[in-house]
Image 1 (cartoon, rainbow, N blue to C red):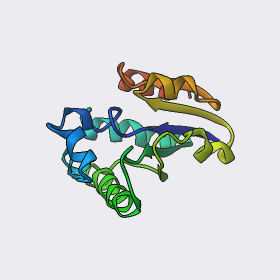
Image 2 (image 1 turned 90 degrees about the vertical axis):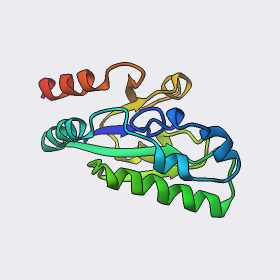
Image 3 (image 1 turned 120 degrees about the horizontal axis):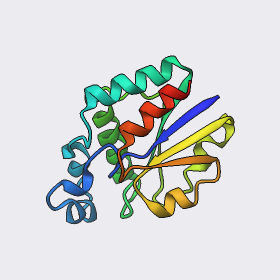
Length: 151
């Protein structure tokens, strides 16, 4: 099994580029998750991810819910994030929207095999115990193309 695990916020979705994003989230307003623009040309990214899927890679999205939350707000955030992924036709095999701060490896540990986390958060990458990481603050397109070339 070969698994690519993508974070969303700051990795593929420009949440932090949405004006007033933090105040909105603290007010239980999920709109920054729907309003975020993609950080990449999604047609190009999706084409690369489809090529990886054709080579046997399993694509997982594992993204934290808002730090400020309650059950109702968590459900709104889950829907907003899934709608974002669907709007941009992100080719995931599975998705996990988890409590803020949860160890992301818990979601894919059972899959085994080679696992690569793509995340913008240095602390999250440092805590990844299942293999390699790709720093989403760098050019993830180049890194993903290198994975295609490896196979």
